[in-house]
Length: 259
Ligand SMILES: [Zn+2]
Image 1: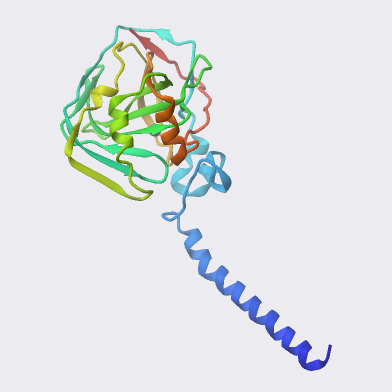
Image 2 (image 1 turned 30 degrees about the vertical axis):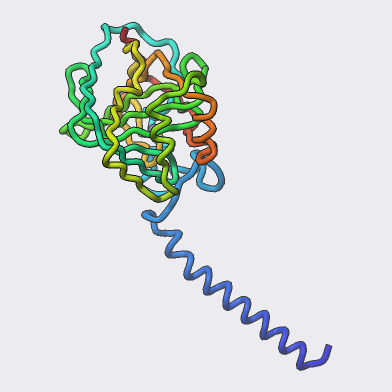
């Protein structure tokens, strides 16, 4: 190798090094911005890392009342004090990169132990996040409610493989691409069609199952599952193979059974 070629080689290495440093400098501020940080169910930002991804997510790691849990040894409590006043809503489907979510129109409520909460949205997980007596279901539906004081109440329904669900069929037909919302305003749906007929339920105090994992969430999980077809499960898992947080320790909490 003569001198000219060697110099040319050095120059090339310098150029590549400069390019790499520039890329790193450009990328660093973006990665350091908590607002931009993404969480996920697999890879480097999987659930075991959520608490480290942002100062806003520390409860995911430090919280003692986290969800989901394995529901067992429930204590029999007062009869069911849950009643639904769900009204029809235009169908608005969001594919948000973590799940398929249906945003609900104002005016639908649930009353739990005398407290009234408004239905905001419902969404799906696969497999189920909660287990009942060590058993997971194929999927889990979360109906997310909030009251005037800002407290959250989630009603959970486990979905087993069986007969197809007509409302879920309707929703699955209209799923937009990731990051998109599909507003089907001429189509009214009613979330009451996603509730089991038997209203016995478990209750406990937990958290959001996604970052920021905030606690003080009233969890209410129906004992009776509903069913979805194998094909309906497949439609979802083709988009989201797994979107369930692993089980969290129950610690000092008590699960109550109302029926
Ligand atoms: Zn959920």
